[in-house]
Length: 284
Image 1 (cartoon, rainbow, N blue to C red):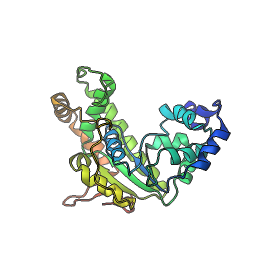
Image 2: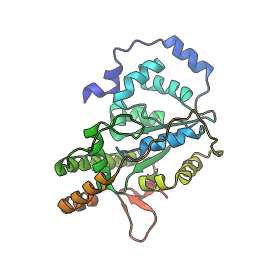
Image 3: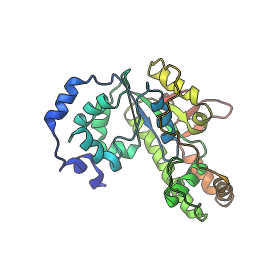
Image 4: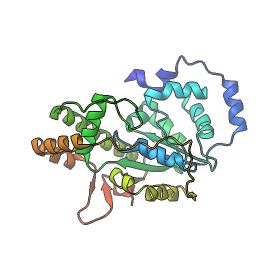
């Protein structure tokens, strides 16, 4: 993983420091920051599109994903973590001063945990985006990886892959590890998170926007039609996904039960809220 670390990716990058400094001197930085921790196929792309479309809640993209980091640093002319965000806080905020970012625990670890939580200090609002139905999530991830089609806006078309219970099991284990490590990282840094559940945010878009706006103390005006706005991603799941999920639940009932028991976030019977390994982290 060493080659994916921030300092390795940027070590040979030539940048124009004077131009970056001049840009920062001209622009006002964001004064409201939020971070969304997520797992694959948890609705993060959809959420980004919805929040960005408000023009008031930042543009919460995966700026420190190692796959994108070199391009981001090149664009903002930065070789250090602090310099990178000095520019991003100015370029990628909405006019009302809001900046958002989506991350996974691995992104933060490769970026530098100390550096990340120094940049996003105690005033930052944290969210944890997760999916209740992890079997459906694993099936979706298995299909996306095998077909190369991750979003409905991707013009690539591909038939569903052959059913592979072992493959789905591997992805479910991956999702469990990511979800739990996200929570452990937040807990270790003492950062309480508001929880966003995939199944809820897709059903209640306006409520999701209102919840995030309220947490940031932002008054979001009703969005206006915008013919230039990018298409909002739609769900790709179909009959194949439902059949694959049903088959997997039947064949791997014990594995599913063990995985659910190992999750650090789970519903309390008879309650609307959700708790995690650290109850103080939850904001219903």
